[in-house]
Image 1: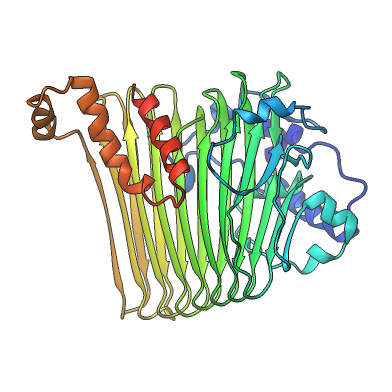
Image 2 (image 1 turned 180 degrees about the vertical axis):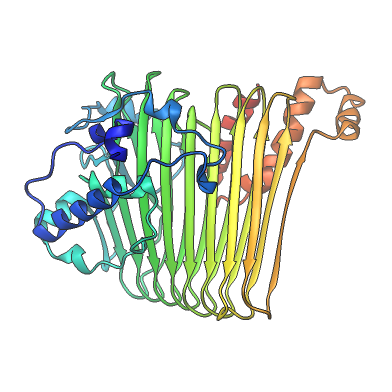
Length: 431
């Protein structure tokens, strides 16, 4: 059985781009052929054990050739006052230059839409460093590639240090067409380059929408990327995103992931530490209430000596909310002197909430420092009593304790206005 036809996912592919170069069309074709040979992910797949596709497939999402036409006024509500950035806005997966406002960029930085870059220099992206390895692609990553129409390509030359963060705002227009959007973001920092990247996923309207985004990040020797990702889509939204990261010698990646929105959201983070001394630090926070499922999968591979990775994720579950944390650290035989630590802590505010947590270590070297652990608990009665004894109303005391729990992750954000915006959003969610 063809998985695409079986799942109704052939509607996600849309029309082929007739202007694309032959090598690009061939890449899309290879992805399509690979998909046709695979079954749909299902509960017998360990990676999909806790997350069913049934609700997503029932929606009947389809690719729509052109993005919605949003007025500039609709964008204003998506901006964070006080956040200075080189801003790029993608509406329904396509870069909208008129709504974007990139301030002048230093020499040595290239930022284009994929469609624009292919039109300008059709062969330039052919040799672009790939972070998605052949055969490593997950089902929906392949689907993204097979359906690819637009996205962004960002490249910093050797030694370039960017003064302000690049902010990418993904906006789902929420039109009534049950639209699926599938942008691809490519980021490459050459040796010694440094940048900060903020990605925000936002949904307009109350109707269902679907995003299937893939971002590929490659860091050359001694490059540094600080990458902050925030998902606050509408309550009826479906969200899939895959991050693929490859790191060369002594490169550093610092990633922060926040999941607050959507009805059904799955985020896959894949990192390959390929150069000696590479460092990958990941923090995460998710809040799930009634009617929400937030699913995080981490796959961190130490492939060279003296690398360091840290994964520290927290979850707050309320009502009948559900979350999944499935994290794996793989240390190869050659990766001696690895330092890896993975933790997942969950705060349960309701007896009906549910979390499935599965941190894993797979170690094939003998000179390593590795640890992992998970906790699931409730608000400590002693702390609540302490605040109540000082005249603080019960609901406010509960919110204060939850914000304190989340604060360790929120404090990782560099920009004060962004930290304030996130704290306010979490406070509203906690009621």
